Amino acid sequence: MPSQLTARRHRVEGTLADAIEFCFQQGWTDGLPVVPPTAELVGAMLGGARLDPKQEIGFVAHRGVSITAEKAAINAVMAGCKREYMPVVVAAIEAIADPRWSYHGPGTSTAGAGVLMIVNGPVARELDVNAGDNLFGPGWRANLTIGRAVRLVMRNVCGSMPGTLDRGTLGHPGKLSYVIAENEAESPWTPLHVERGFRAEQSTVTVMAAEAPHQFYNQLSNTAEGILTTLCDDMRISGNVMGQPHYAIVLAGEHMRTIAKDGWGKKDIRRFVFEQTQNTHAHLKRTARMSGSIDPGDEAKLRPLIASPDDILVVAAGGRAGAFSAYIPGWSSSRSSQAVTKEVRRGSAA
Image 1 (cartoon, helix red, strand yellow):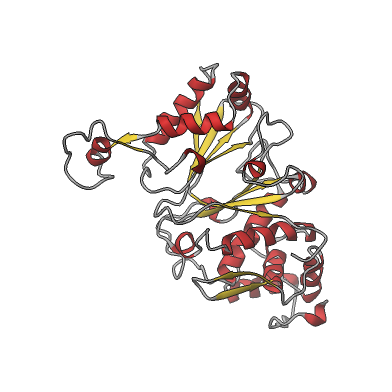
Image 2 (tube, one colour):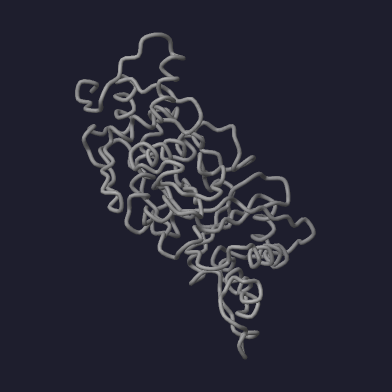
């Protein structure tokens, strides 16, 4: 396999530390040290997904960039991935290259979107992708390195570098890595990937251009409506309430069990949240989110956060204890970037 690689090779004399420093000097890093991508490590990474180095796994039309398996493998090595993570990285790259995700917007916008990746199916359990405690935090190699590999591809292959193509005004920490799994083992609900047309036994990655998680707290309510009313009140005035294509709602253990106890499924959650998060045109104009003067009827005219209840992704994930859950607004500049789900294919060429 190493003999089939075509990327330019660099010889670095000295220690491993010298090789790491060389990667910094070339601008290949995200600010953290990377694993120097030797031919042997890249070959092994490609073997993890049985990919030919020259195989194209994504084409970003907005950038005119072809993402080959070799380029993806190089960045997966640098990110610290295990070779068995490579099929998940490939599926995520396929998703961000999909025209429905519309790379140019979330990849360059001043809104500073991260790439939220939600892993479903057997692969999440096999690779120990965290779905529980400290869901968005550190401590899980699969979560951190898979997301980091995708971001390094965006940087080193697609050119989305901060200060040049990536023009995020603030950005957020999820732009380093933003990967979770759904807690299918304890969830009472249909898994996200099954809702999106896949079989339960298939493994998938759902990719959404997303802001940072917004945590909300409710330990007083013992009903589904009480918890979701708190959520909706927070979502409705969250600041970015115009133009999102999606919201993701992540319900952790205590809230999940309370809502399920009342017999509410994901469809009920989506419908309630859609209805209860609408703002009046008058409110949006008063708070300078909508242009124009307040007209007769604006106090009664409603605008929803998203176009349809189906644009809300409901995910069961997070710790078993604690009355906390979260919502995640989609990329706020336009409705053009859609969440995309791709199958994780293992054991054969993608």
